[in-house]
Image (cartoon, rainbow, N blue to C red):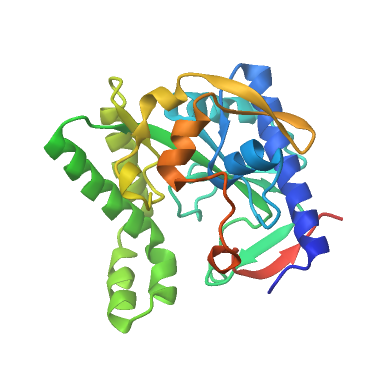
Length: 271
């Protein structure tokens, strides 16, 4: 389905509520986070959502996220919101987290068969260290690629373009998900033992060769407040390096033909 302008504005309003709840919990507990990806571009370029954006993204370092996970147990408004990851929803397959609004629905095309808890969401990506050595960095890249494909397999077995790929994902989906998350957690703990030159979120790909292995760790050293839809939210201070590596000329909007939207099957807004 294609959202009408009114529905898109309403969806952005719900996403803003979700981001503001994360911001509230983080500020109360001294936790640093940053707006991520297109949401960060919107903050820098538009002081709010990119006009056509239909989601919102946040990221944190692993240390900050684990503090956030614990803080949510006592400080998240559990009547309205739900922190979703593999430790809180056994049906959740992805390697990044979501904060969802209860009493809503947001089902994407190709995910109708998933049994995870539903709701309009904001993604929360976790940044972990990347090894510095030439060989170690490439082996690490291969490992997180495999982890990502295993986690995608529950969708890939239904949605991959060819029968061969669907068969391959069907086999990958036989691997117990708890094994895959254990592998991911052990890899993160190993690489996070010391500061490295690069960081990245392991289970979502970077598409530009300039940052294929990750982003400079120095990008995540300092954070600042920015105006976003009339609210004060956080971004990394060195957002220019971050955004230039990920997107190139981020201040110039893309042509209309390159704008992509989430493929939505059904959506239900809060009453």
